[in-house]
Length: 271
Image (cartoon, rainbow, N blue to C red; front, side):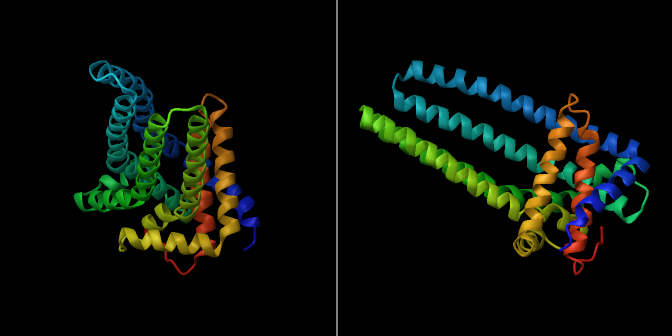
């Protein structure tokens, strides 16, 4: 595939953003509200987890009780994160992606398009099912990571020695790296899933997942380049107090839409 699609896509995306600037900015601000709530909740959950763990350990003073209580409280908060993402954050993100498709097609973009998933109960249920399907593998991987680290911690407590502590710490680090790599691979393979889902309203969630795997594997280098370009765009966007994200997020979405249409002309845009 011609890598000129990157520069051409960025140029075209910026032109589209300029024509629909207000709609994209308002859409991004609407999406930012639950994301800010999400981030604040994550920060606060760290403090709450520490406080609850200390309280439970004061009742049952032992290192294992500390590990177990920390695991349980962390798991509860992670479940809350997942539910919030499924029912709020991802549906609004799909709305912003829908705005990107409209812009690339040449349609007039309205900020109300960000509520794409909330237009009807049928649309919302469809988007929630996709969100759950999309996020479930990441949750399972995170859950396994926590479980295995808990087991490592338990073994370290039962074989207290300098060597066991070193081996346990090293094992925990290796597990973290392994699961990080797995998450990265999964993120690349699922990279196009939200876009294929939006452009194929008559298809189910698994169709978008399968086609994303197929697209990413067939165009692996281009997919990695797109991931890196979008990451760099958003890093740059965060520099001026995050205000640049009002441009870089929709610009990145439109770049992906343009590239996806080039890579998969067989998938008709029905969004």
